[in-house]
Image (cartoon, rainbow, N blue to C red; front, side):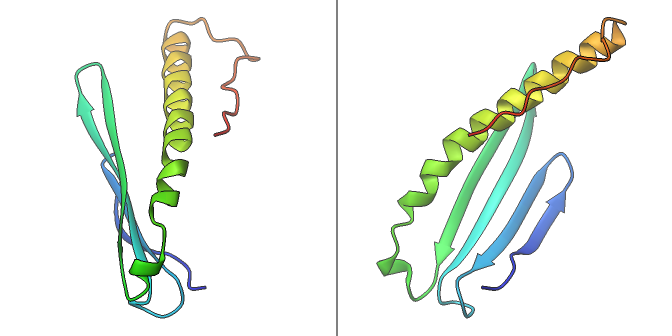
Length: 104
């Protein structure tokens, strides 16, 4: 299987890549993450667009099932990092403080 190819990499804004199953245009998936800053937080938009000759035979909804746990884990990690940054700036961070690994 070919390795995914990065299409867009704008730190803090967007990451998009193309994955393929076999030959080009057989079954291609373009996956993306977009970050949209908003007062008090950031919106994460994640999605995937599929195209190719085998699209009719694939159950693309199966991929959606992995989005929600992954998004929840990413949110927990970002919120933990934000808390640790605030504690560090206030001088309250201990050497043992850490963000736990969150699995989805």
